[in-house]
Image (tube, rainbow, N blue to C red):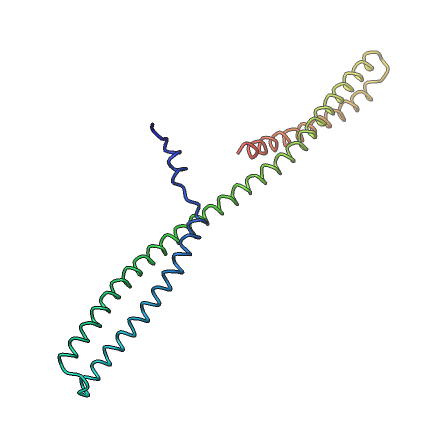
Length: 200
């Protein structure tokens, strides 16, 4: 049975926080071992110097010096090897910790970006709903003016108002319609911008 790439990514995904937690424990333990090894190596070096001093003072023979020196040298060689292995592992852990920290920073940046986008969408939705109501009011007012224009046109035809009054009212209504058209255009443009933000 085959697995999709996405499934594999899920199967082998490690939370950077868990990685940091695991490596932190190992790091502390290895650092202690590393410090202990350094101390032991210092003690071996001190022992080697002491053996040299004993030889100089004639407290031990050349043969005893060689035997004791060889024993201590073997011990120090093994310690140096272990120390190198510990150093290598510490270096690897350090790389893993840095990688996990980078991943955590990326995740945090992505979370902040998503939060910011969500907030922008939320704000855009509130403004969009408010403007939509305003747009409907503008449309309603335009219809009212159109109805009023029809009414005074009828009054003019019936002779209920003279031409001068008719023209005055018509100019005022056309001015109101022009203002409404400008507002309507601005609102439409802003609604389109908000809709684009909401759909992100």
